[in-house]
Length: 309
Image (cartoon, rainbow, N blue to C red; front, side, top):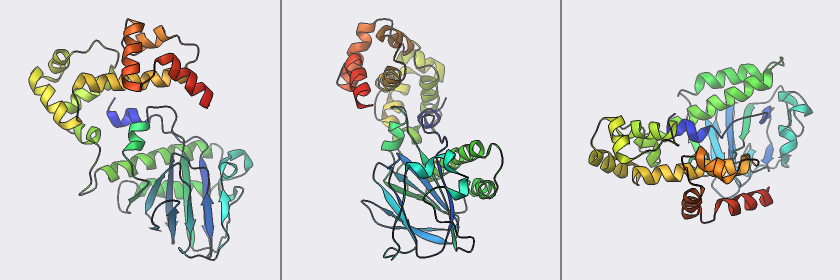
């Protein structure tokens, strides 16, 4: 399991396609749910994405913009449009309310000039948090990349009404998100997060894959170095230089991230159960590590998460 695959597994589309609309100016669609991630792609025409706290971004045919919540945003024909905003919230995203192209709150004009596809992604738990933290409020991916064929498939799928359509759309949206994020992280002159760049290193990349594949294993720097075929000192230096922290510090933080999700997602699991799952035979040692990383002990974290939910 590589780092990106682990981080993005908590970011999945599930019945979250707001819809596709063919629009004639003037128009203004106001997305009010503040989803953690929202992907917007234009099939034909153009429009403007206007974040709640940010500068407007022109979105042309074949281009994709990803908006990071919780702030809301609008999609308009012109920045100073005269159109009255149509509110698109949770009701627009509910599959039971109608076919993909005719959801509640959407304008659909067969003669329109701009066709927009929008998908919202919930981010469950703590695992996807490092991914969200690495993204700006708005990121753009130009046409001409690996996402173009996926966008073609999306365009074909939203034009029909067939059994299993929502499942197909969800998986295409997931594919489109992965393609878009890959291209954005690898863009010329970009500054990707340390964990993204480190994956490409032949030594540190192997070490990261091992830690993510076997987080509960009794890792030492020596054991990790042996598995990657280098000396302890070489691994320790390269890992710290590329990731920004020592291997075992990284492992502890990742274990506590996994534990945080288990504490909130597995209510019947005891602290001892979760400790063993993430590599601790002693629940007291686990609790001390959790409090050191998270600032509260596991029981307090669980109570706070349940109260918030």
